[in-house]
Structures are given as C-alpha cells and as structure tokens.
Length: 342
Image (tube, rainbow, N blue to C red; front, side, top):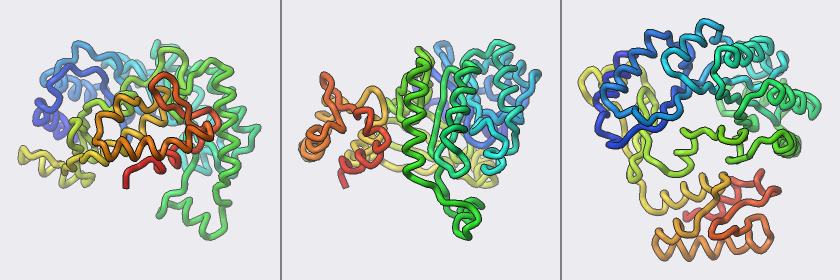
C-alpha cells in the first residue's frame, strides 16, 4: 500500500501546479505507520511537489497507537500537528463507543506529545449520547482545557445504519440519542470554550488564537486540494474526484499506471449549495461578493430565501458577510438546506 501511495503521488504530480501549503495524514489509521513508511511517503512528496512553503503537517492518531518513541519518530519526520481521537476522558464512555484506548492512555499521549515539543494538538470530543451527563461533559471540557490542547473538534454522536450501536438502539438495549440533551451539550461546549479563550471558527471546531486548522480551513474556503490513497477525495475548483475504496482494486489500478478514481463535474447549483453549507458554518460567513459570482437565478433565490433569517435575526449581516447568530449555530445545517437551490 505504501508503494502504491507513493506511485499515485507520482501519477498526480501535475494536479496542483502550485506550492503545497498543508499535508494531512487522515482516514483509516495513519498512526500505525512507522517512521520508515512515513519517510518513504515524504520522499515521494518532495520528489513530485514543491514543499518549500508547507506550514502544517497533521497526522490523525489513536491514543493507543502513541508512545513516547513513536511520537519522537513522528516529530523527526516532520509531523508538527496531531489530531488525536480522544472522544472522552471516561472509560465507560470509551467502552460505550467501542474505542480501544483508555482514559489514562488519552491523557498520557497528550502529555507525551507536549513533552517532546509537538505544540500544536487537536483532540476530538463527542457529546450528545445517553451516558454523558452535563457534569461529565463539563469535566471532559475542563480536562481538555487543563491539558492545554490548542484545538478541539467536537461532534454530536450520530447513529449510522448498520452499526452495532444502531442494532442496540433498535433492540432497546441502548437509549436513543436525545436532541434536547445534544443541544444543551452544544451550549455548554460553546460557553466553556469561549470563557477559556477558544474561538469557534467553525461550528464544530474551536481553537486558541492562531491555532486554526490551516488544512481544514482550505476546504471551507473552497481551495484546491489533492487526496492520495483509497477513498481519498480531490477537488480542482471545477471537478471532484474520489478514489475507489476497494484496496485490492486500488492497488491493481495503480500498478497498471492508472488512477483509481471517479469524477463528478461540479455544476453551478452544486457549487452554490456547497459554498452555502460550508461557509455558513464558519466565522467567515457567506460573502455577498461570492454570491454575485453565481447566475442571476441563484442570486435571486439566495436573497429571497435569506430574508426571513435576517428578519428573525438568526442570520446577521456584518459588512458584506452573512453570519449565523450565536443561538442559531446549532441549526446551521438546517438553515443552509433552506437556502439550497434544489
């Protein structure tokens, strides 16, 4: 797989035609990669892309994959940001979520990373599930703040069809998610992190000053990106590409010097819908100048449909940007869908 990824990097060498700003190892379990495997990937990247202006190199990690030596190896190859899937600092919650790590491992890997000098840490925390009382949720947030992590991504638990959790809920073994509880947890999240100096720069993402995820922000700001590996997505401002998720088929196609991907041409309506969905979730909001780049029908649709949200103050206009007010942030996706062109 590492060899195929390196070969795909070569095959995709002309996709960006610009200097790379961020690199992100995500999806699957990249924290299982050894120092040698990461070095092979970095060598392929350096041979095929201009990395002279790279600012951020992130690796997603499971706490149980990290020890002090592995963290030293990650730092040595150039990883300068970690995104760690903590989820909770309570063992009973981690067992409920079928996570392999313990609360002690979660806390310890953060301390190790800070000790060796990886000073840009992001963690994931989950809220809105039956085991999580308000008191436990506050404790999770206090723990993250006390540990000094610079970035927190926090998501409401959802039940995906076909999962073990979905089966347990359907059989009555586990209580279903409670929307009122989730909304309350979201309010606690915003209040606690704001008081601790974190900025909510995207609905689910909070950071201390200057610690925004540069990589994820590029998605939300509709910039070009290239994805490498099975199931990876790419975007060239006009088309979206996604690699097949079947590992065997991916390996076979790359071996034949063929890109193992499919393509979707992004029409104007889709581009508008995606712009509204992503930008409404951010502190940058919807820029009126960007809306005026779309055709007249889309412009009329936008200004007509946004008027009721301006009238009830769920959306406010600041200079030439349309932003959600604080109380409406929990409703972001629903409001965005009302603005879509169908």
